[in-house]
Image (tube, rainbow, N blue to C red; front, top):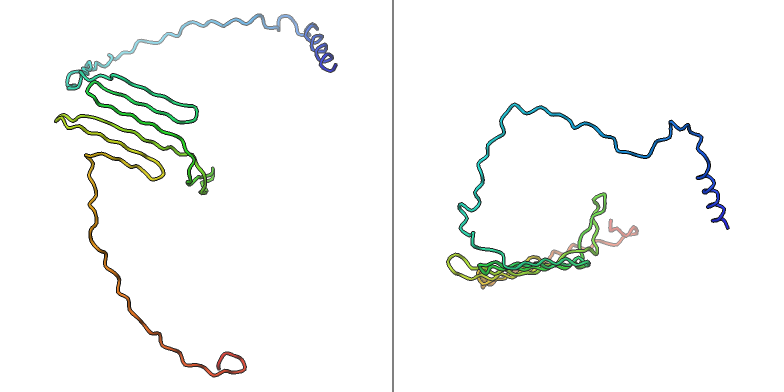
Amino acid sequence: MKLFVIAAFLAVAAAASSSYKPEYIAPSYTTPSYPAPKYPTPSYPAPAYPTPSYNKDNKYADITITSQSDERNLDGSSQWSYAQSDYTTREESQVQKKMQGATYDSYGKESYGEVLGNTNKGSSYWVSPEGQKFTLTWAADEAGFQPKGDHLPVAPVHEYELPVAPVHEYELPVAPALPYTRTGLGY
């Protein structure tokens, strides 16, 4: 019922004649037209740049991309890859994951708790100009960046025994006993 009363009131208000004089009521809206601005022609000549020649020194002009994919998911994960005509490939995927870490509020105050982070993993394969084949795989997560490949240097293995700190036996001197007094402090 209230809705009917409101609708009827609005209909009467819309149908009522306006108290404005007709010359003040805007006609149907039309876009104003303006003459195009006239700018003077510059008095200096346009700079003459040499035409770029992109393929002049390109020794890899015959390498083309043979496949490519890129997938982004609503959950924040993604994966992409490409392959080239020289057998170079690369693929990578990442997933958003809840992990423990530092967060900062709008005032810069640090707190420790659950944060969203990315974990990535991927691989690359390529052939050097000398014909050597390289494969690199990696993972990046809570443990940090972990690359693996036969061509990567390996840290030397520690084979030495660490020296043991000497142990000294000390006897602490015993303080002489103070006689008991009424105050209990010994003097």
